[in-house]
Image (tube, rainbow, N blue to C red; front, side, top):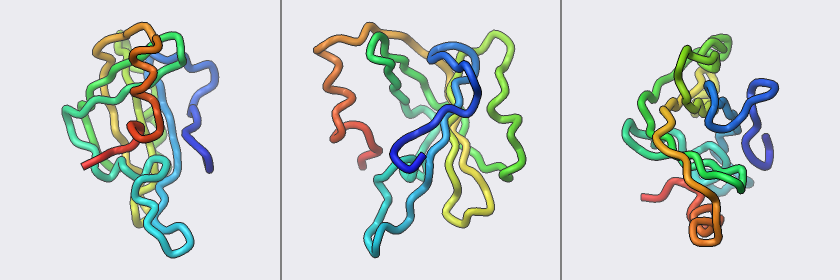
Length: 129
């Protein structure tokens, strides 16, 4: 989790069930803002935003349905829901007492190709205002 996001359940497959990922919220990196690092941008998540993931065969587009906070022991948020294809992103809140949860539903799946590979270049992979 220091270098990216990690899956939260064994055997997860993108586009199936509740695909759950966690990563760190970085508030300070040697005296500099970490606002754009790892899952720090989740503090800005809003209902309706899109989330794009790829396994480099397909691109999975999700739309955010819920943004809320839970206590660290509320792990039920990563459970699969009957007949739902969804994503759950989790990171620490800025006070470390809560976790930010961003959940969305799968909207569409696209083939990964050289035209849309640019969507996953580093300059496009973080929240931007």
